[in-house]
Image 1 (cartoon, rainbow, N blue to C red):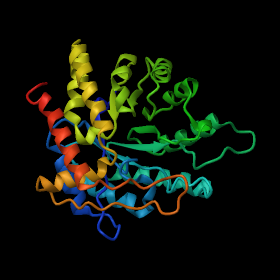
Image 2 (image 1 turned 120 degrees about the vertical axis):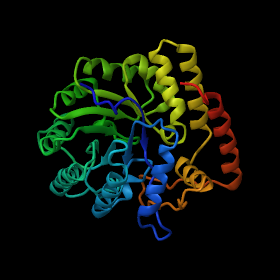
Image 3 (image 1 turned 135 degrees about the horizontal axis):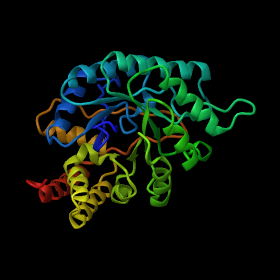
Length: 328
């Protein structure tokens, strides 16, 4: 049976930092409280892509795991990004044995601290052994981690994943057959590809999670069950209205909500910066600091929001949210 929290908006939780770049545990709890306020989020994914997952150390993954699980325990499901430590710089990949062992250990640590599931990015930190195909490498990796824990494991193909590591329909079917592998988030807005992936996994205990919220409406038609994107933090009530309306057969309302979702995505180029400032303005003790990715040629820092950008998007967000006040 599909896990109940694999439906609707799953928040890719932004990470709260101190001014020196260290994790701000108190600020993180405050942000989680702010995100919980609308009552529309299905689960909270910490060490997410929008939470700057590639900047984390091994001990910091444990730190954010303990903090989130203790704070949300009994209140809401927690998913932890538990891949091994790597900054996504393909010019300096980690030791493969260490990377896999870290994924196992961090997944076990999350399980031991009450997490409801772990999220593991496609292992593009690894390269195939002689005679091994990329799909076989990927299946071997997830089989190893899934066999080490009892909580659900989810696959995440992030933006920028090299083509050779992309999940094909055939690979999706193989992954869906791995015991304890319960779903997949794909950061791709190609409706045809989404359809083919869902088609190949239909009838299996495996959920497709839309990773491009601008195509969530199309993904729902194909059989998607949940969505992860910036809007799951900024405007989860719109996403929930959209899915509820779709499932109730009110496609006009669902399409209206999809348009609002798209307008809000296109309107904000730094959602983490905005949400931290917005939470602070609402009285939550959340700092606005972020981390730099440094000299990594494969990643760029977000452009900070100007005061004008902040005010403009705040007005846009609140005007769109007003359309759904009091609506299921």
